[in-house]
Amino acid sequence: MVKRGALPLNALRAFEAAARLGSFKGAAEELCVTHSAISQQVRQLEQSLGLTLFRRTNRGVTLTAPGGRLLPSIGEAFDSMSTALTGLTDLGAAKSLSVTATPSFATKWLMPRLGALRQMQGDLSINLLPTLRYLDLIMGEADVAIRCGKPPWKGLKSHLLMPIHMSPVCSPGLLVGENSIVAPQDVLAQTLIHADIGGHEAGEEWRAWLAAAGVEMMGLAGSAGVAGSARLEGLSFQDPNLALQAAVDGLGLAMGYLELAEPDIAAGRLVYPFKAQVRLDFSYYLTYPVERAQEPKIRDFARWIRGAAAEFSDALSGRLTNCE
Image 1 (cartoon, rainbow, N blue to C red):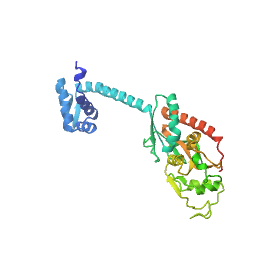
Image 2: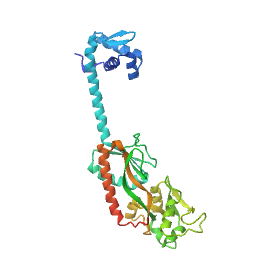
Image 3: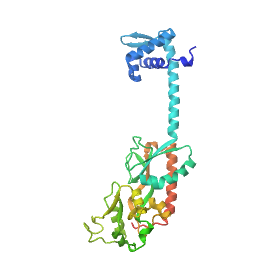
């Protein structure tokens, strides 16, 4: 009996591939080695067993009786190892979920709630991928995404998590002193902070809020009224999180996404001076490939985040007054 430690695994793999494909050349291509390597490994196996396993002809190879007897057992052994390894890979994948979201949503909303998810599903490992780019879920760049935009997205199932409401926010110190902000018109004398993310025209969010608040912008450079292309100077950031931090630091007034600004407002780092709010055309959606909807890890995450978003929106809605 050949001991396990002496099993010629490379030779057995060469034999199994050649026997299954009926060709040393085919086995070499499958195993990414040379034809001579396959031939040598099979010959070494035959010599160690003292048996001829193949009949070699110009047209290929065929199994001898000993080779035909050996193949089923070797094939089953390799199939068993492949199944075991695949099972381990699937087990690891089942416990890991890659989630992509905008950096602002990841920082301000998702991360503070991941502890609750871990308590509920302690065996689930979250791989968070913050980016402003839409990762390709169909190609497997992430398992699920929280996207800020408008569906539909081809091949993806979408669930509305929450709308986005906007209103100016600033540090409490900006509301005191000779430059205090009393009326909506007063914001035009302040440094305006823009979160000009992809898909938005520069200053679009400020113009929408000023129009809702009834602020006239005639007379500004480049102005054609609020609905026109008035140029609004100030600081501009691609990420709403950076815009909010600039407001916390007292650099001016940010057009805040109130759903993201809520932690800073609750902590007193930011205030919103006016009740007038507008709802952004874009909203936050959970998305994932349609064909993966029944995967347990995706289904469980979707159930959790939709519940958490609904609870958050219910708590926030009492403080929001829409001017849509």
